[in-house]
Length: 169
Length: 280
Image 1 (cartoon, rainbow over the protein chains, first blue to last red):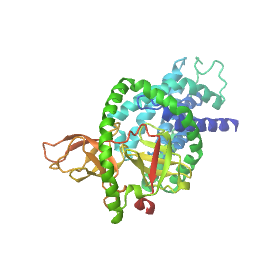
Image 2 (image 1 turned 135 degrees about the vertical axis):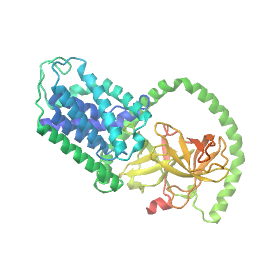
Image 3 (image 1 turned 90 degrees about the vertical axis):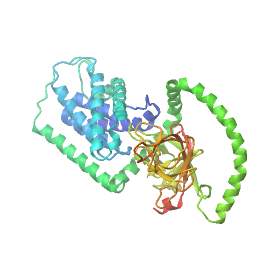
Image 4 (image 1 turned 135 degrees about the horizontal axis):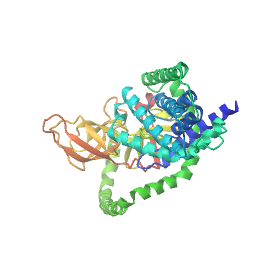
């Protein structure tokens, strides 16, 4: 119950930061996907299934503020959460740089799923060279904010890792 | 080392979520923003708008600073150019005032809807788009002030966009340079109609459906056409022509427009209670 409340608080915080703060912090026309990075962090901590479910919820919440169809971010975030969870499960070792790297790579994957499925759903303007550049810049931004989000996700999932999120375990 | 054993349950969860998402996408696209999705969106905006208003005061200067750092190279040149334009503009403005006053009086006589006759609600921009792929702004007025979906939004220099989502105390405005937006316009000199469309990743617009034999001059203005079923009232300045190329195949001209309003730097707007939008 406490864990669910924490996850909800994390989700709500991500939505507020995404809608109220990051519109002012655009770099080269791009903003990071805070909810997507949180999804990646959750999947990294607790696995593919919970990562996918959290990603779906976080994506659906942010979809409420976007002009793109409701469910598009939910699908992209859920797929990313699942993929990161599977990838994490197959890793034999982890190290300090894995978490932010996953934030960047996962952000790139999620962004590509978003524009591709969006184009398939009838929003052809999403799949352009410019938007692919925006996805790449946003992924780099995701990478930068990952070290801030991963500890929060670890707190929300109540994972008592002996040596911290960025250390080998 | 952590080992996860992936079974059919994991895949089932993902498939279930994917199917749900695809169903939602389909329903939302068919529902055109209404129904449960529309209600949920309005409620979500209602919850977040006080936070957006508070965050605006705190983070707006930070955003300006970031823009200043990234755009500093062009600021001096822009400033010099703008001073020259302002001096020329003052001269034209003085001559134009008398003509505008006369024009307004004539239009009132024949009962033509004119922008300055419309009821308008002033609003402050409280946030930009939350994502990377839409061109929207949030304003601090909503249905409690009579705003409704479809109402045109203008700033001092011209058209900004139209309202696409309304909560009680806030609204979402789709800017005219959003790739999904289209504005029915007419050219200043020839009066020929066309459609100004946003271009993905560009601040400039494309002017479509102008016949190849219509003369189009660089610097020429375009105004809303106000044709039947148009989303906008007539004669609102929209943009000026920055480039016009006649086609070799004789099919359609390639015309690029620069919006008159700097859509990235809007602080205040006016929402027009335009007759057609209010009915709809």
